[in-house]
Image 1 (spheres, rainbow, N blue to C red):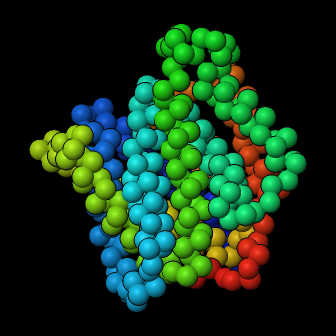
Image 2: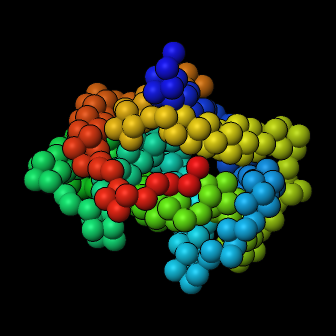
Length: 312
């Protein structure tokens, strides 16, 4: 198998690891742990295992200026820590429906393209704007099914706009992290950026938990510790390293197609282990959204025009 094919397979395997998060996370939340506290523990473990890479590339500290520090603060506190809280709170608000939250997360490439146009001056084609409409329609069907837009503000039939809004806001923060992270990687090593992302996210979550929640180490049973370590290291840190290892030999457009394994596998896993099934309208919306977003990315992704290469 050549490098391009093996890289695509590795990206696909990483997306399958991401899909295994919800069955291990839901028992923690149902068991009384706060969303911020769980995210705090994740960043604690991820920060620890990231330290060797951060120390190995510590010379990159000398490359930091004010702009780069702001970028690192954003991807650590915003795209990593706050986005994780919003995503999980959105799923909880939808009766722990991580499937819908994950499908709405596929708006992330759309936001990334828009943000890249604003901050990186990348051009947007007419086809992009034409595909935005079916993407929005798909997102609506996933969130609300056949319910009229006039009724979603009143939580008719147990459906509310709060959960989907939080999930989409998380996708927006992640998209911003993609744009900012790509800019940082022109001058900084990936392991250095990843390490600071988790460390700065840990600091943000420490303050968040102390201010808005509370430390809940007293509730941590061996079962809870096991689940936390799994979602931190297996579906978090290791999946991220695997993804970027495969991405080195994979075109961005191909990687986008391989990443569809995440929502598809997650839908099956959550149906099997959490009993979360999608309705007919939600399935139709998922097909429309995933198809539109894939077409958007294939149309809009372009190589950097300044000739620089990303740091390995």
